[in-house]
Image (cartoon, rainbow, N blue to C red; front, side, top):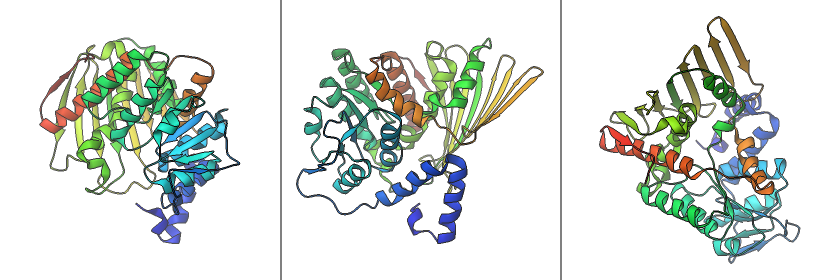
Length: 379
């Protein structure tokens, strides 16, 4: 939905609701991003230089859409020592708009300019889904650290090539755009789950944004809503079960005529844990994506709602936590990628990157073929 075209009263209600959910500053950036997406004019030639920008910057942002503008650039600028030097997008107007907003030195149309700049240490990739792995592999081969927004791959071949690049260039750290595992309430829930014996039963219900059938998400090359959206929650399942307990697993689909945006799957993991995931996008969700998780493990009954409310029941003890603002872990995740470079700490393991990629690819296969699919964590 283009909120800039909605009636004034609708806009006021939306802003008011978002201030209560995210606070004034984050809401302001989200509003600014709506107008950024209509950015004009562009720049002539292959680059635009801001003489007052961060010429000594060490960060490049590839893909300058809504998320990069309102979230990645915001937290890199506000919460890290990183300085944005380059912005790049196939739509040069968006690259220019983001560069001006955050004081970047150069808006460019040439990725080789970014790759060949030895001063660039961390590349944040938030372009169209099918290009994430392509940009990342090239940066890894140049020895740069990369933060890959979801999904990190859209097909098996990309996952193979990404793994080969990581093995050939172990000096490059790879970080994932799966932000929810670093949210405050999920970390609390995960701590409690690890204290309980046995396997886990979980149920995810996700109400996503309604998008048109001609949206770029549905291009064959982009992987659809499974690769573009459901990957968040399949990844969370791995965190809840534990990578060491997850594989091999079995995936069973449940689809209807509206399978492009409305579907359900169940997963049985190696340790006997089970997950049911339902994704629905039947209309407009005024507060954005809505997420509900119910979990049972050992004596723990837990419920997580929108990464804002968490309830924990353990026998006769009951805990309830409500955050002042919704926390999806964006700040912690984006800053972690830069700070890990700065502090010379490790990136994600190859086993994890492979596992979360294979699981969502196999989920897509199960839904595309309407058949039960088995998944192992090996290429």
